[in-house]
Image (cartoon, rainbow, N blue to C red; front, side, top):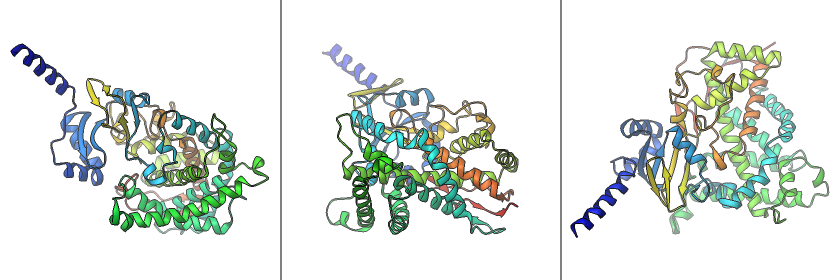
Length: 448
């Protein structure tokens, strides 16, 4: 009996030794740190426990946080038999018919249908739209007066994605104007509530959840009307907008995307497509205001018709000012081996993108804004994960970079940006994205 007890004791000790070190704080305290002071809390916990540790937080439960590059690669390359999307996820915000709500074969099939609208030759079709919307927005910018550029960037990216989805004939000006009015407040509130499921009963029918439902109902009415109109359009085969492309597509079994799910996907395009892109643009101008040499080089390149440095600068902004700093997965297998650690079914795995981007072994002097580090090489996973990685990498990554590139080029050709030694803007966490606290304030003058 003594030998048997010893064996069980050894097995328990071995199993325990394969659990990552845990943060020893009350769950509520950990949750507050994760929700409101995430970067500071994560840095503190990683400094104490290393690049793999466990936290226990509301909604996500017991979660393993990973920032070791080799182990991040393991997470990003895991099969859906091992890891699936984290719960709760953005389908809580955009709807169960969104690609965020699917896993396995269904997720793969939906990505296959959505991808052509955001890649390849489709991107060339949007370049003129992006330039037009940029020039339209900046026509009334004040000269010699500091202003927040984040909101103008948000209007540009919203107008671009609406035109890309519905085309020139796919929506009336009244319908687009209504969406322009409803989407911004829906996005602001939705970011805060994205991972907070509505409580049952009376509480879920009131407060912020009720406001979200009202916004969503108004958006759905417009979307479903436009989807039905496009589906009945005799010119659908000739249209090049995203909605038309998705209606023409079909699953492997020949079934089109149901209109209810298509509504969720279009809202995903609008929400995920415009808000984070606008935030990256805001951070871009925030960085350029404080780096006159980089700005001067970018202006010369734009005037000469080049783009290499501009793309490198975009990738560097995405690194040094990481907008979405965490991606999550949930263990679907009985266990998931993460290096020396064994993670049980149902546990959440969180990849700390910001810590990867600040790793001095990967990026020397990581605190320095230095686009030249990407001049001769493209950023690659797992060291650089601005758009996530693996099977769930952001579908709109190419679209976003192309849009940022055109907006930045257009502004640099038409405006001079004043540089100075202003203190860096701090980051403000909106619930999903990290934005410039003061709205990326700049001062511009028109070029002659």
